[in-house]
Length: 217
Length: 217
DNA sequence: CAATTTAGTGAACAGTTGTACACTTTTTAC
DNA sequence: GTAAAAAGTGTACAACTGTTCACTAAATTG
Image (cartoon, rainbow over all chains, first blue to last red):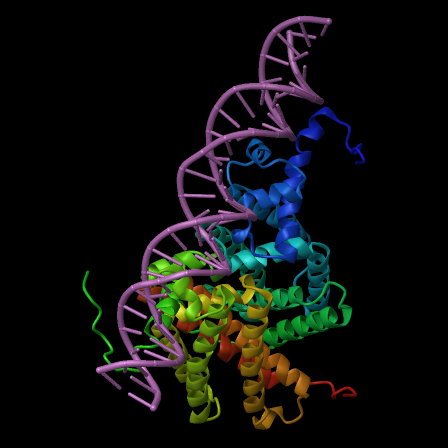
């Protein structure tokens, strides 16, 4: 048994098993069942810790799940913020955003696998939490789109509809990509290309769009 | 204890518990956990039968799952065939197809809930089976689209891409609709309207599209 | 260094799981 | 109507589940 020597700090050590539990859960989700069918004992075993130690860090398996969710979206939100700040999406920009995003997905595979399986398969609270985050992205994208000169006469409802279309499409392709083996670079590249084309095509459609006027709010 | 008297036929009676098991599983999935986290005993209990009786009908829980999947898509395929035969999608047609489809979803809620939760949350074989069915729909739609006069110069790859976009969008909205309560008619109608607009928008984009020539096959 | 808080351990519990086996009951076939 | 086949029952068991409790070991505090 090699004794861990890593972060020697007094306080840093506290969270080490906590992190081990989270990593164990992510690993199990990535290569096995969805989170909802993981057992507490299974996770602690993989984390190299006795079952009862779990309770020092989480009250519950579902608490662990929510923590993993927070962690997943915390960094994702940050990345999205950076992408957004670059500029308004013109044709060139679409390609760049998609590359950045899908690259991020690849580098955080286990987190995305976790979220993907929970989106529709998880508990009610879990599902709601994820959908709230997605709706946030949609709203932000709609706000960005509102600045397009040729969309000034489009109702806010329709802007929301368009943004939903973009986000849903990218989410779907993300999930398809996650089904590919981790080192299938060709397949992953295909997904990237497809995503870029789809978003481009949507923008063509958006440019043609004329809303009926907004109904009474 | 009221004795069941329902389908009195000699042969019809054989499959009755089999159907009861399937219904029980669907019910549990609809109002509880994903299929993967159902237990054999849970299902038999709900079906009003002793656990060991299960094995007279299915070797396994996963066998039950695959049967449910078949059942789900068997009728769905049939409906899609009818929708397709009506005519080529013009603007009027989009609305009609979407109405037919979403109406069908509403009338087969439990089946769709089951499939929806298994799409990304199920076992590997389950996921693959569903994705194969979806890919089938995509190919058929791509074939239909190939007949558009303004798409004769579009590569088959791009046709596939467009069809994927349509199907993915409808699937996503289907899943969102399933999250709504069964009697939230207003919300469900909103989904229908959104779906119709999204597909219409995509067709606007499609009409603008110009492919690069097909690469070497 | 001594006292205290915190993280991790190990045994034990009641409940649930999938499945095997021998059985009774019902349905089908002749 | 009787024999054979199929469907359903009940008991049993070993494996695993979440959680409890009293405990030891370690880190933090004064």
